[in-house]
Amino acid sequence: MLALWDLQKTRPICSALLLAAFALGGCSSQLADLTPGDAQPHVREPGTYLPVHDLPPDRDEAIIPPDRRAKIEAELAAARDRQAVAAKDAK
Image 1 (spheres, rainbow, N blue to C red):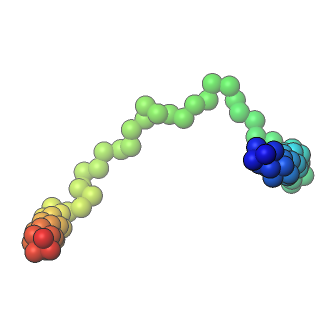
Image 2 (cartoon, helix red, strand yellow):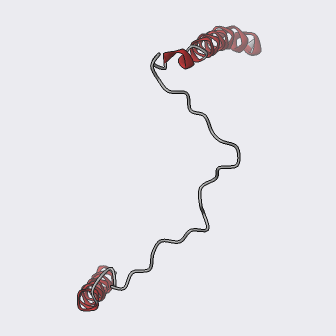
Image 3 (tube, one colour):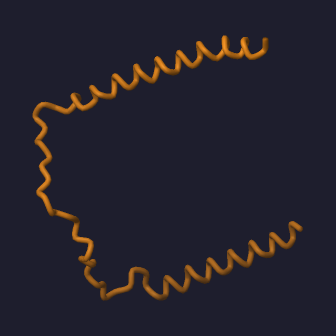
């Protein structure tokens, strides 16, 4: 008796989900038609790949100057030490 009640309850839910999937699937095929009429066609030439072997030019200067880098590292070390003390006090 319980199995029959479950089937009667789940059949409309499954049917509604199936109908919704079909409805949304039908709409997705029309999305390609939404491109503007004056859009240029995107033609790829065969054999054109991104140049993955090209490296960026070398920089003579450091991205972060050494004095600024030392200051940042000192600030990070101080923050790490403060957190270690706070964690030890919390125990």
